[in-house]
Amino acid sequence: MNVEQVLHMNGGEGKKSYASHSLYQVTLSLSLSLSLFQVLYTPIPVPEGLLREDRKDLNKGNICIAKTSPPAVHEAYFEQFQRDFTTFLKCRAKELVPGSSMILTTMGCIKTDDPLNIWELIGLKLYGMVLEGLIEEEKLDRFNLPFYATSAEEVKKLVEGSFGLHKLESFKTDWETHIKKANNSLDSKERAAIIAADIRTVAEPILVAHFGDKIMDKLFDRVGEDVLDHMLRYNCQNVNLVISLTKKG
Image (cartoon, rainbow, N blue to C red; front, side, top):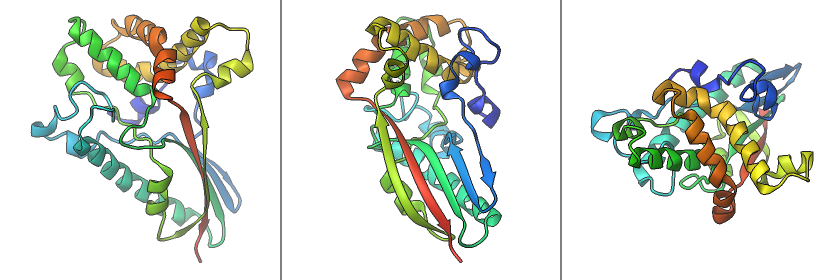
């Protein structure tokens, strides 16, 4: 899957467009004289370790790292992220003068082998549709989301070479905090529908490229039905890491 597919969101001005769900829009980079602020969506290629013919079913029933994923799946994703993040830092180091700063913010997690993000719920709903015969099992087993949410501890270990780590903080919110702040009169069903619509804006182009568009309405209706229960049951949170780095002399 190429970068355009990963970063693309629904266009236009309809209910499912980015214009209606701009919270999920991502600014890729903003350079300011001697400092750099960059937001990392952390799209990565599907890990090479999951593309070999003998390992394509390794993450069976899942679309990302999930509770039922074997350790080898986490290892494959982390190795891919490690290569990509290290390359990213090397490229940014060439752009900055010694003593200048770079601030990164990226989606993260507390435990990378059980990241508790909304993609796992989408995977569960897709698997349910496999059991009902709405999706071919092989099609689900051959799909691995090109996304990895790193942890603060992993970042600390990977930052080396041309940069020094000045500060690293993590910020956590549940999946509905932003909705409550915008309108605290909405009931749980209305909040759940907004969460499902928000994630659909980001996820649909990625999923349509592999599964087609016929199942999308059913899929995100099901996500909306269970999203708040899933969040409360597993204490799911959005985690954002803010990383301050200084270019070494």
